Image (tube, rainbow, N blue to C red; front, top):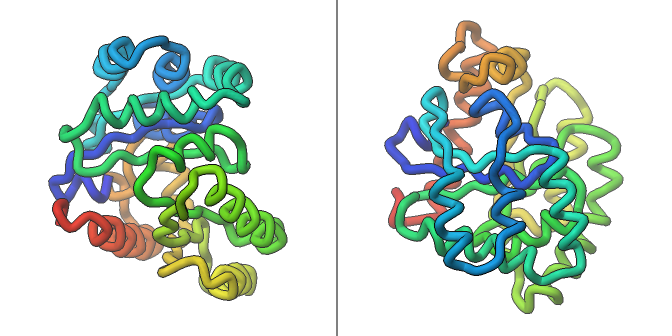
Length: 239
């Protein structure tokens, strides 16, 4: 929504079976990514992509949504198939030139859908929460990225890390940041301030900016603006 508010054309592709991005933007689970993964030819995928794009007026973005059962089924069916990665490339080709940014929302686990979207993406953002599990999982993440380099035959462009639900007063936030910095893999680390406003915005399928009322809301919005600056800087033509 922050990118859209700056006049950018944005497509959100929900590649997470949980469908959080879908629910947040258009309010309910829907056909979308799973159907694209299940089709045959590139021509069929191109036509289907156009038909499945929905508009989120509240967020000012287009969305290819997800449904848990259908997307989970397709991931299981294509786990060992290179077609999972090919389909995401075909999706990108189908909408080439129409958007300034295509954002893939990936599963929180390091699974085949995550790998496939990284294959199609120009840049990767690692999103973590301030928790002991995040700190313990950093080593696994670095090993995953190393394995991904071998699989893709190229180094994935890790643009930066995002710490969500970040209360700067909590030691865990500082510990997670320190752990990320220690890996040496992240050019920048952006925290997003914790506020209950995100929960309210999610329940109303509206961006935080639309319901902002408090100082805590504004702190989170400032962090989102800073993140948008970082994203735009990755694509000079979109600046």
